[in-house]
Length: 175
Image (cartoon, rainbow, N blue to C red; front, side):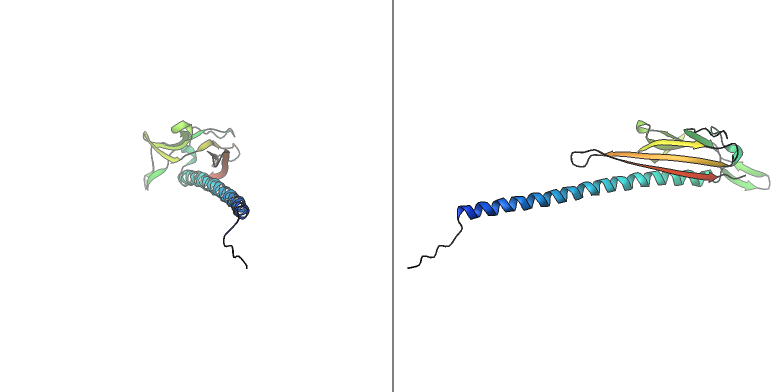
């Protein structure tokens, strides 16, 4: 007579549990790495976006500035941390009417915000800015060179990652 035993032995159940735990650990490791990569990518995109937005704002206004309206950045090739200039508000037969001084500089929270100041009113253009410099050369005083660096630390998982980007631009001023 043949006995028909249905079910699993203890050894079979232990082997399945062991294999299941190894597969689960591998899947968790892959998902964790993916999550860390996503976090680092989002941080890098955020830093780039902030840096580009700040630089674009400065470029748009500096293109309107006249060479004679720039103060704080003489044409001597030295790097300066802030720039003040004027932009035209009206142009008519009598000439150009210039705005009050517009200043771009670092400041705000932990000195890591790009600030636009005009008539005592400050506007934050970008966060996580670690360096900002302006310069003009004596050979070409109607060109302003801008360097802006943004930096952010993220902590995906148990490690710290630093994302940094530096953008460089030249702006030709009005005559």
